[in-house]
Image (tube, rainbow, N blue to C red; front, side, top):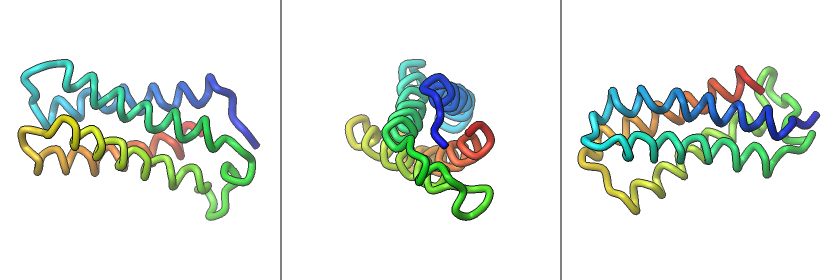
Length: 115
């Protein structure tokens, strides 16, 4: 089974929207651009992975109710946020590490719940 681009985009948007309050709560950034950037990176990681790997073999639940794509989308979220932090180092790396871990879990939950 494959999913429509709209369905994948909705999943990414939900993930990005959930990243906004979590980013603000954990990082308390001085600029909203930081919150928006992290939300955008999080959403992009989900959208780009799910869209590029949207094939039946990866969407089938191998370990019910989880598919390979359900497991791998959060991995990409973790990697994308790590790349973001490499180019824009966080003021508090420990808090950013917590946020990165939390958004990885959010990515998994949203992917399982919406796709």
